[in-house]
Image 1 (cartoon, helix red, strand yellow):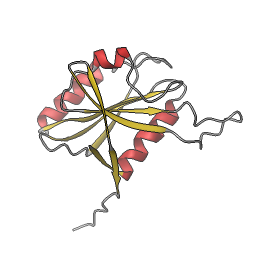
Image 2 (cartoon, rainbow, N blue to C red; image 1 turned 45 degrees about the vertical axis):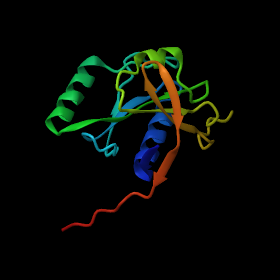
Image 3 (cartoon, one colour; image 1 turned 90 degrees about the vertical axis):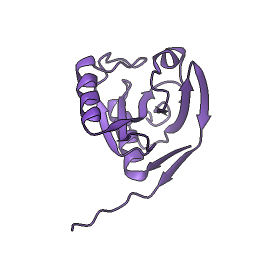
Image 4 (cartoon, rainbow, N blue to C red; image 1 turned 30 degrees about the vertical axis):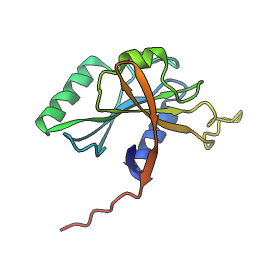
Amino acid sequence: MLTIDQATYDAIVAHAKRDHPDEACGIVAGPEGSDRPVRHVEMVNAAGSPTFYEFDSTELLALYKQMWDNDEEPVVVYHSHTATEAYPSRTDIGLASEPNAHYVLVSTRDCFTADGNNDGPVEFRSYRIIDGEVTEEEVTVTPTETRHPA
């Protein structure tokens, strides 16, 4: 099961809507071994495509260096589908290289109306993808904790 806070959920959905009609992509990092998505990082879709995403290799390497320095790992790897359901394609499955990550797909296919309004619904689903096997999992969205200054 993926447990994600409302602010992170909202940020992923906003990114997917903003990059539409191209696919959006990003990572949510968290403390190693915690399975807690904490730090949302929007990435550039180097492919600039409505049907494919590709992390920019320089940007991805810099992010992994940050995560190593912070004892973090990718807890969520996400991208959007702009014209199809939120289910991993064969390409998505082939690219899934983080066995501990939750692979989140957001479909923006139904959120844009003929007049350009993007207030329609999105489909937000999470999967585990291990050795090519796709397993859908429940997503629980929790209230965002407010941090009070010390």
